[in-house]
Amino acid sequence: RTQSETALEIAAWLDNDDRVSRVLYPGLTQHPGYDVAVKQMNGGFGAMVSFEVLGGLNEARAMANNTELFQLAVSLGAVESLIEQPATMSHASYDREDRLLHGITDELVRISVGLESPADLKNDLHNALEMAMATS
Image (cartoon, rainbow, N blue to C red; front, side, top):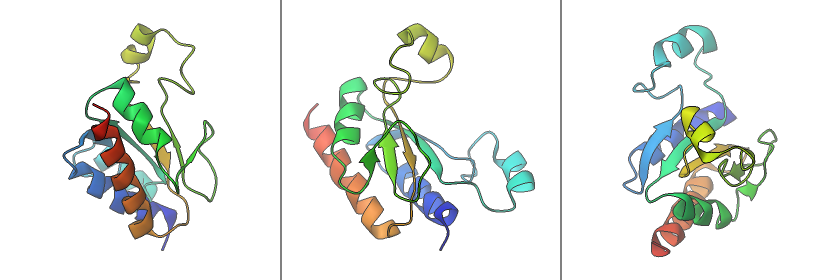
């Protein structure tokens, strides 16, 4: 199983989760770039998934900080699964208004899917979302 296949499975799972308001992944049919991605990516849509956690900054931070398999990291390229919250990590030095102009919301979380079991990764995200929702 490829990282891309696992990422697609996780993106679809997140898209059906009531604690997630939006999922950005080119392999999902509702993604604005889906048709182009199908033509250009030969079915391998990559291992990067972005999504927005319901609530806002604090919920997204709590979610990103409470995973066990996903390791907190600003660099998102490795064989292990990684997670970051751009508003407080990679893009923290930008003014909030500038971030929002570029689609980087407070509730945005980015993951890089690694080689771990899809079921284990979904369970990890589920547990972290549970903890995040408990903080609100």
